[in-house]
Image (cartoon, rainbow, N blue to C red; front, side, top):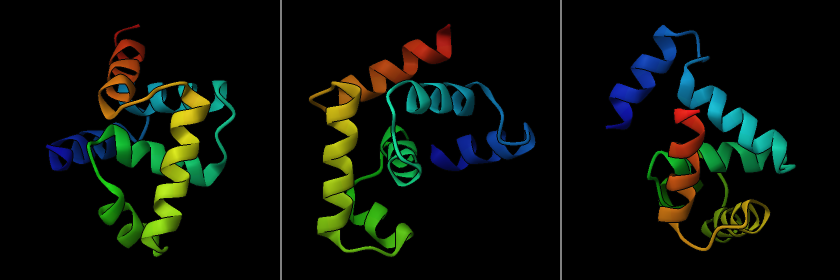
Length: 91
């Protein structure tokens, strides 16, 4: 699924609805640049192992960033995070 999303985002110059929604949420909740990267992966359904590998950080660091994203967004689960993104995309 993320392959289709990535291709669509690239075709749209990285500025598709999904990207704009993520950027708006990240800015509105004060996410750091690294937290915004982690947020993007989480919104795409990726876990800490994948995030750690892609960002070349330890698993614990990926988990810490994930925790910080959840706290700043005020969500308690991956589903709440995805629901937040879905709502922003629809607007």
